[in-house]
Image (tube, rainbow, N blue to C red; front, side):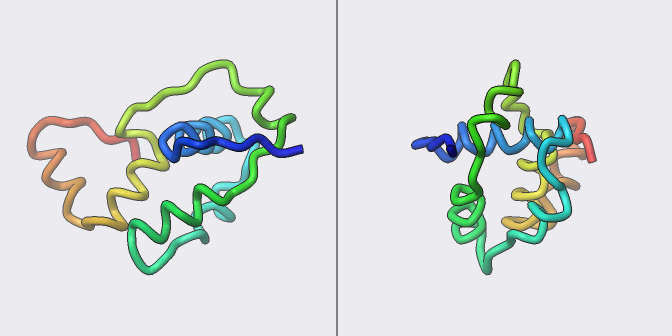
Length: 93
């Protein structure tokens, strides 16, 4: 059984936590890239999360420096990380 997340933001947070814990393959998720940020968000929102995977999550971190958000920021604007770093924002990469 899969868990449906009506919110894209919540789904992204769940996917990021599953990436961090190693419950899903980073290479496989990285291969899901659309021609635009919007298309990529649609594709990521379609990634299924099993009830077993969801049950392993103890907490969610909606930090903008998380791997999934950094990857999406690069897709939307390749220079965004440099601008954030110049403002003192620490990005985990």
